[in-house]
Length: 430
Ligand code: EPU
Image (cartoon, rainbow, N blue to C red; front, side, top):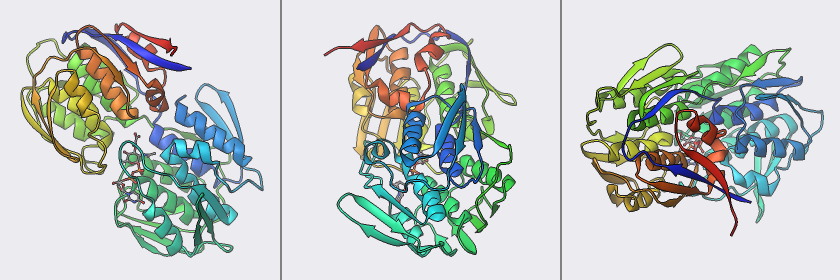
């Protein structure tokens, strides 16, 4: 059954109002599921967002023979039995890139892992050389076949020095988790600094791991045995990308929007950029408030995506929508993924003035009114950007491929409706 979102645009008026809570981070919780495979006792995860990627992760765990019990909303208990399957199921694993993080803990704990070719996706080719080279450096042997890869560790992985050629976020997290059960010391250099990695490392350290330097560019892991939670619960940190997207929504479509349950320090680059553009933002301890009482037009700002704490690639599409409403010309420079400007042609059809220079750069001129349309969500983040665009637009719009949005955002229509938006989910029969 296919579903779509039907949204009545506000025709440029900033009439939404209220408060919205930020959920647990997709890109922290999927990695926390992977981390649970390093534990010898039950690990409980809290503040788990009820999103499609989590459902898919639970399906993979079931197929591996790992016990996952959903105790209540957002609370999952995971218990690894002594023996599990080390083969990642092809169809589900290919549905979401984060499944590859499971390879690190499975290989280091159970001695081997098999997984399918991940393939490319709409945002780019997404190679896995950092993972494979890292495993080889840890003394594992890799066999590639038509179906995918089988990696063996011949007993224990051996700690080593790894320099990340490119700052891969999940590459680092995967190798860091592999290092936890490797023999001796693993030193990873040129590590990206995303807060979700430090959060995982801090929790693993509470449970017996020895990881130094997480949150800096050099991480040192001294191998230990399997970890023990002993009742400690992993609390999923708030999703900084969801929080940032709501902040952008507030700037272009709300009279007043309070974004609760977030860590403003985790998306400072966005806050500072929006402030530069003239958005009125108040930063409080665990919330941000955006108000638009005075009206007026925002000014443009160039955007260059960068690893944390720079401007996140995952906020590039929503920020582009913001820039269609700001006065002046902005250069968008997407440095991380080569396919991540493809959604822009749809914004142009809605009336945006965007000129694509090459796969990585585009120029946005604003402000331009946007026209409501039928659009297809190409991926998670561009999907949310389209929601923001059709909210700004005039008339009714329909967003197809909602399953992409559901992969990363829980019940988005219910949460936006509470701000005064006319939005409904409908089934499409065709
Ligand atoms: N890269 C390689 N070789 C590798 C791995 C990555 O060349 O083996 C390249 C990529 O092609 C890219 C760059 O390195 O050009 C950085 O990619 P990275 O590996 O950091 O991306 P990722 O770990 O696969 C995570 C998030 C993404 C987010 C990026 C960048 C998860 C599950 N995914 O992806 O989130 O965009 O980091 O911050 O944590 C999303 O949530 O929609 C999403 C795409």
